[in-house]
Amino acid sequence: MIIRILIQVSNVQEPNRKTGKIEAIVDTGSTYCWIPKDELKKIGVLEYGSRTFKTITGEKADRPFGSAWFTYDEASGGSEVVLPSRTTASCWVP
Image (cartoon, rainbow, N blue to C red; front, top):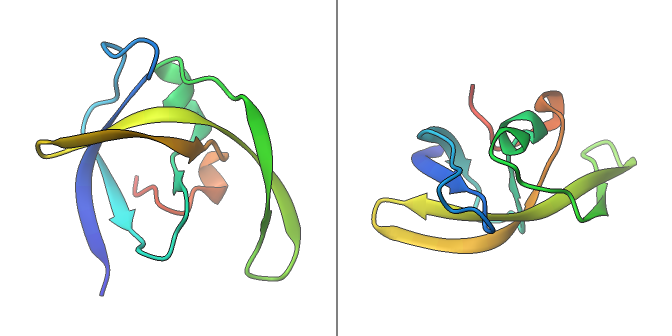
């Protein structure tokens, strides 16, 4: 079963800079949220490092990451976020 939720992502340093409501897929086995780099750049989320991930084919791929603030209904909190290109964003639903 695929669970989809509406979230809003904000810049941690500038909370007034935020996305509109975006639809995301909930993956209870995922360690990080993946939101396309172009969406996060619009609200000023900065990359501050990279992580190496193992793809489904066994290849290793480096992806940039940063921090963002997530809001779902009345709950919110900060988390690291991966900033992939739109073609590799695993939890983004256009």
